[in-house]
Length: 483
Image (cartoon, rainbow, N blue to C red; front, side, top):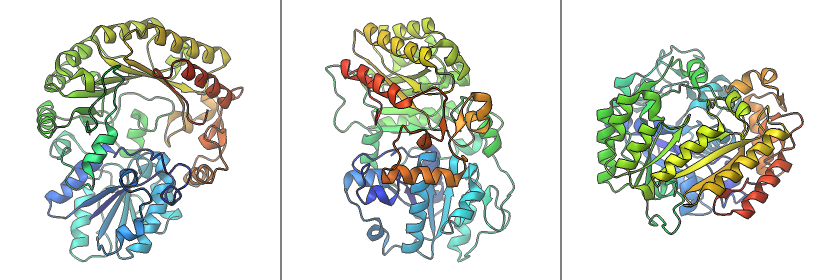
């Protein structure tokens, strides 16, 4: 079996296009590790290639040459983040040309949302997993190992041209707890990958060791929130995977995973879901097992003081960082996009973080519906206040435009949100956008590149204003690419 993580712009990047020197989205979807190890536990040999990592190790990698000579029966390609649409389909075509006898399978949230379209637009793809793969994948692999050329009928969540509406299956806690989500023995250049995904928090005068490694550890699946631009929220999970709510792993199993990562020399663990969403008992049990590991954590709302205390007690601060998405400097705009806290609460939270010597990144979103000129000025003003208050130099701020995920509330109901779609929003439109970015005919901040336009918002002007702030505080402010 062969697993491949694509580059966003596909062969154009591998061939040395303008983005080739800056590999994007090297992070593996967290479910991949458990699935590859599940196949290995069932007796299959699995090899994984992360093309973003391979490019850093071997610039100009010749993928066709790397694939030549192999004979995998099953090739797994993730299409989790929508930015990988073009890259995943070009990769599937390359696999079909190099390995004509292999069965090509796609999976991930974006693949799930576009399952039928993928099969219609890309003949090189044989099937798509819609939702959780832990039931269908081992059965498919076993059938292919036994010499079958087509999957058996009735495999749950496996969308094929013959069976476009398979039975639905949703993984529960016991299924997640049974997975090995730690071992990366199947992945080429695994340590290079782990070095690439360490967040390297801002710590003036202290730089994490060159070999510092990170690992993303799933502690559950699903989401409690429905943020406007996100296709991984509560409603999208329900519609695409059938998951009615959050599913949490056993804290004892999370603790065992943390111990294994600590023993392997990993310095930073990133938890996939905010532990505050699980409740105090689950949160405290997981965080109490960190044992000196660094922690990277994305808080969906503001982190609780109990969470911050647990991190301060149990984590290595030089390898720890919290990320908070403030969306906007306008509290009303922020609340509309799912963040239920005001400026005063945000500033107080950052004071608590600083008092504990912890690093933090605060993210804003540029050009979302409702961001008029006054809201944008409020964002600039709030970012300025954050910089001024950060006397320890442990904080970063960033502002990024948001391309809408498939299944995101804003993509499903654009009129209600007050945006104007610039294309149909389907898979074909996303592929056209990616080709425009790849050949340079689309600027990344063009509304056509994002798929929508907000009336009265000149995104390039706002990005330029933000980047002026970045020139004034280059260590603290991350500039907008292309701004």
